[in-house]
Length: 412
Image (cartoon, rainbow, N blue to C red; front, top):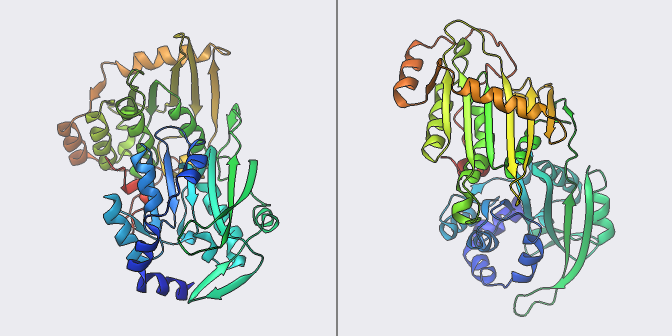
């Protein structure tokens, strides 16, 4: 792999020129028909940034990366947004993307590294999402002009993907190289992740994380209400891109739909909530969300409820509520052992009861509208607990040396 990186760093300009104009529209269309309008796409090993640019121009959100610093620099200039320099073994997102595009990039990994890389990408894909991969057609590993290649057949691909869970379908087909003077054949792979079953009890840990449930509910909601005891910056950043997209989707993608409503209620209970998280919520509020803080004055505030309402074309209400133990922290949303019970309406009127109770507490006289002055006063008097009082309550967010695209590109 180092030799391959050296090749791309030393030949970035010529590679960019050779690939930027290749017509990929047919493959793009086959992939994008499975990605929701305005969805978030990872371009994994983006090269020149050609495909990421095409997705952006069609109204999709894109987080791109490449292992070559020189190609990442050229792609950043093309896209007008940062492109991370990282490799497949640094992909650590969980259920972030509606689609993952890895065109002629995984083929540079040794065959022994492919199952782990595919597993990391699969973990980063949302329920119901789709992945596209492409390899040169063949059944061997080889070195060519300073680059490593792992060629693939359908049988080899199916073997590498045999341990992936929740595979709904896998399609392979062969195309010819579109570059002038090239006669190579390519194996294209489109793999769909099955839609998450609406389990009633979400029990947490890395096998049953809460976060994918929230992502799926946010994507279909017209009204979103959260009430949690505390908000940590680490957890909020996992939700911000999708919440932001929900607030703006009618402007860009669904002009006939009413703008989504988002309301978030948290508290100063035990001084656990991060001031920086409140500042991020304030920025979200400036985009149209409503944010309030419950002043506990020594009383307890233990609510953890996430409510999502959707109205059909005939204006019929459908709703989902998750009520349980998860505050907004990275641990609680991704790998903590947390129980959250799902309530669906119209099957269960409990959703309506929770919705009414939220209205009461959101407008309680002890709540305050979030503003800069309140955050400054809270930060000045804040004395966070010396020990964790709940999973994730002691999380801190270190300044990253290489911010992840899924967070940095959509920071409010």
